[in-house]
Picture 1 (cartoon, rainbow, N blue to C red):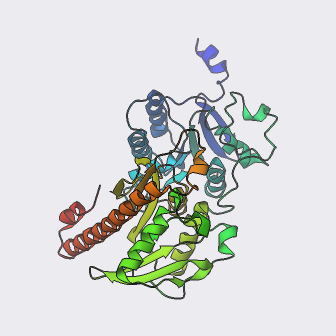
Picture 2 (cartoon, rainbow, N blue to C red):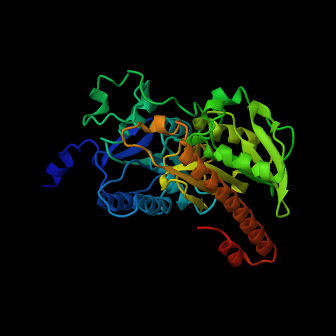
Picture 3 (cartoon, helix red, strand yellow):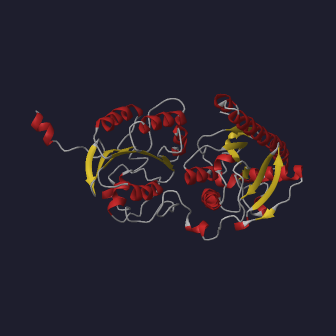
Length: 401
């Protein structure tokens, strides 16, 4: 019996071992119901290796909040591995499991960017667990990319066969890489147009960043409510806009005794993160002292919500920031725009001007959003004051959850 079992070939994608360039991989990426995560982690915990890396794709067959599940899985993985990667549209939710900046926990919406990261990070002697769903993730492509040229990076394949036998393997598809050589860097399309700021920013300055589109004809659309909120805020306080690098609009002032900088970025949503990352390397700008104001399709129309941290909620601009900084510790003020006609494509809806009735509601919501920003700044002041007085526990209670 023992000999028969030893002679049995492992089933592809079912705890199947293989080695590439001296790196040991365990492929458990065929299916990933939640019940199979713990046994795979138990194996990794017992294994002996120079470094252990866990890569998580799509987890299935569970009830309750998906964000909480991914955070729980991330915490368990961090207790075992030196580095943990989450890949896919829900990946950013896992960043909430970070206990400190030293935790090597990364989230990549695109498998292409995860492959770029691993090509820089992995070395001989590592043990890597790939855990995901083949239909949703095709994590096998991470292995193929390490061995040679790979052109298929699409996220909507859905084919239930080995990538090695697929005729589309070398057909260019899927999103472009955000990071060609470094896991957290500025992509070429942004960096060649952006230079560091001429001035240094006080680390205690709060940067309020409104997400939107710079084109005039998109001014009164759902995707632009972040921009419009900052315009209202500047108008209320008499702050003047100045043009900065890359046509960014900046307005400086002071609120509640704290320096405040309003920022309207003039770049596509998916380049917001790289642009902010470029600024952070050339100045004292910190995303941890930022408040992001943006639209939210999941919120009822004109409802306003403040949030301390979390995933991207499907917003490409927030996703870009999360991917560039690999940290979800930044404040958000979200304005609900969820009133789409189901017959209208989402991409069209967010770029369609509001009706007069909707515009009236949104103007009220933007005024509320300005008040939420002030409340967050007030909370930051209270937290800083209590920290200076040595009351760290009380300081944490001043933050929104």
